[in-house]
Amino acid sequence: HQLLDNLATLVPQAGGWNHLVVSTTTELKLQELERRCRQRERLLNHLGPAFARAQNRGVRALLSGGSGTGKTLAAKILASELDMDLYRVDLAAVVNKYIGETEKNLKRLFDAADISDMVLFFDEADSLFGKRIEANDARDRYANLEISYLLERMERFKGLAILATNRKNDLDQAFLRRIRHIIDFPVPEEAQRAAIWRQVIPPSIAENSRIDIAFLARQFPLSGGHIRSIVFNACLQSAHAGNGRKELFMKDVLVAVKREYDKMNRSLSLDQLGPYASHIAGLD
Image 1: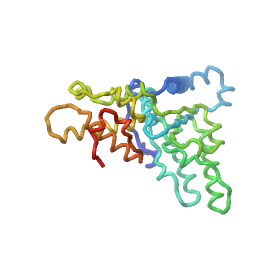
Image 2: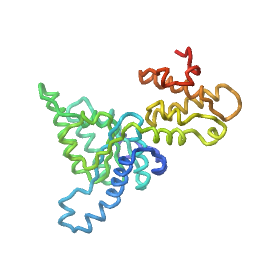
Image 3: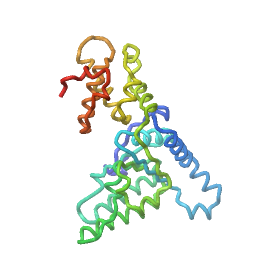
Image 4: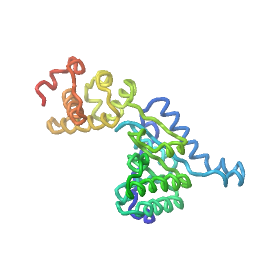
């Protein structure tokens, strides 16, 4: 969108809600958010012009949870279900070290979004909506002014804004009070993890493979994003073996699990690996 002036980029649409595996509580809150978005114009118009003028048509939602728990996917699906474009705000382009420039960028961003039928998506929102600090110098005072301007402009925003963070406690409390929809994305439970494993392994591979999904879901408390990364890397490893068949082996999957744990600086115990410990014996 030219009016956004490189401050945000269009995000490809995702599928429907059946592609997102989350807790029942999270699912119900997402459904409530979708209904709110669909009804906002009709409800305010039905209640009459006096009420409509007093209320902001805008909808603000905060998605909070660890990495890979489905926040971005949920934003994509919501925009897709609403038949709206989703634009991810480029925080590096918006935030400027020069005094006053950040406010100008924010004004351009919100003005463009106000006149367009789009969803603004602020990923890592804590870096932009962080707590105000004690003003010890001019830079601190201007940083606080930027946050104050952002809060005020967000409150006047007529569209749909979705914010995602894995550090909700770092957000400014005045901002949190302005958010009607705060939706938590916890690490999936065992049953949800099993569903994610089944969903992300391609059917053409799953039918030729003997993967102990129940074991993987029980032993490794991982988010959906980590599971997708593991399956992708395991498929690469299997393809590299050059056996010419579309299949996965538990060894490939467990090696990928080990690599994913290494990236997270977490260790695997022999108890976790159980009868499959020999598959990664000697792997550093």
